[in-house]
Length: 582
Image (cartoon, rainbow, N blue to C red):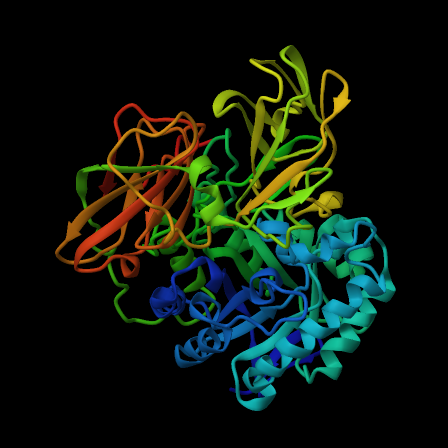
């Protein structure tokens, strides 16, 4: 593909002016067998470009390891598919991406140094970034427009002006890394209007992010950048949800009007999101602005393409708006895909999590509880065990619950402490001397925005009973990356968290939505594929199941239910339940 250049106040591709009309799609939130479908629909909506983040934490799960590129992480294949569809690519490699993604894409192993200063010139941070960029850019170089590939521009960091760190030298170091790594296409930064001064660099194109009031925001951008193309790098046409809130929506007509306003100004635009996708497994992020708020599994984002990739009202209104300014393909848009509907799947087998923990992780002994990061663990749960020093009533105090601790005495549940509610203490009774204290702690998502990025998980402080610190802990990591060693049976299990297993038959696989009425909180897998978290707290009431996860014939579903269920039945339905609009 021809390369992108900046000529006066315009973008150009070769000798032709280009108004970038882009949409965000995250390959790591979409099943890889569905990438081509989503990219095809992007072009049919009238887009000429797709915008994509790169999650460092998934691509390099180990400090000195190679890049993971298997399955849903095959970035070169995604770029090839974009090129085959005739789409340009705006690449946003991080190292920090926000994206409501776990830790904003920063690997958890960075936190093994408790004093590390993230997103700064701290060498403990910059040196791993340099190693990551060296590996990543070697893969990206053949896909740059200057090499005939689709990548026309690359972002430097992400909304750095909002970080409050003000380390311009850090941004300059990233530019140097990118250029030394062979990135010879234009670079850009993106910030909200009030952060443009703090987030930009001389010689690097500034872009602005906003939801509305487009003319005013673009005018602010022009004040900070007297010449050069105007661009909104994130036009927020929807929003994300948090557990316990409502389902965020933005009126389609209002957002189409804002898109019209942007394009009528001659500005380029990237719609965030074109297609949100799903926080599969344990990958959702969280926000903490005084109150910890984890993001839900669905990243539908009220996008033009919904979580299942089907066109919404926004898709058609945006397509009509774009057609006023650019050619829109005359090809027919594929209709909504067929959905599977299968009611009343019984979960007939069970296994206790607490009993089976030794099969799922290797215990470690220490004088104090170890954090996930000290265990070399990214996601999932940690099981902590020790003994209570005396018989009788008392107060258990946890100074650092990250993020939700279920408490058991001699295997019996006695309460739950949540970081979200600032809960740190629990009254309980030790039935005998040396009763066994067990704490199951869930990482509900590392903070992805603001000053709280150094978000250690598990128990990040001492635990005391009646004022006496408890020692001699056994800590067992439970990443739950595989459940193959769980021995299921059809008998009763002890009180507490349990795996539930069921099977169902499918004649012709298709997308569907797993509904879990009566279940409390936990995680779901189908055929070993981690769908994500469910929680009766809502707003989300279903989990998206990509059709490629299913197979013709017998399929397996496994739930980890953390509390309990009266009737162990689930349903596959043809419609999602994302909750009432907020």
